[in-house]
Amino acid sequence: MPSATVRPLAPADLSEALDLWVAAWQAAYPAIDFSARRGWIAERIAGAHAAVAVLDGRIAGLLVIDPRSGDLDQLVVATACQGRGVAAALIAEARRLAPAGLDLTVNQDNARAIRFYEKHGFVRTGAAVNPNSGAPTFRMSWRPGRRL
View (cartoon, one colour):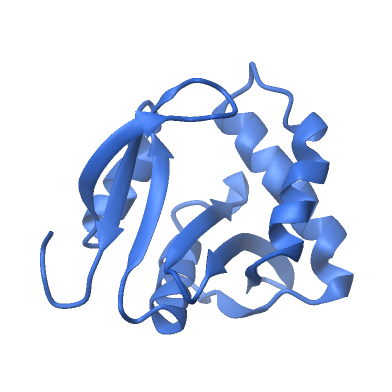
């Protein structure tokens, strides 16, 4: 099975990356209109470092991160590409960009994502509420060489 290649998001990638983001989140949370949030994520991408994972010549995943703070804002994989190492390639890129550590927020009902992050060494470090949906969230962190 070919592995994903991760590279910086190019301006020509933006529309495809936004489509992927909307479709992946829509599949995870069908009751929320993620098309209406397309402008919101476009602004998040514009204000941060963004990278894409390419698999079979198509964008298969998106990473949005602040390398200075280690805040992993978005990690999303196309539904058809899940389970093919795309998210692991994006986590590796996030760790390369922020080697001192990563922090993220994940909805508590997103069990698949929580399992993935725990598998990759993240631990729960707190809880809060998603400001967009009001859903309960976990704060998760990864630090090199140690469990938090």
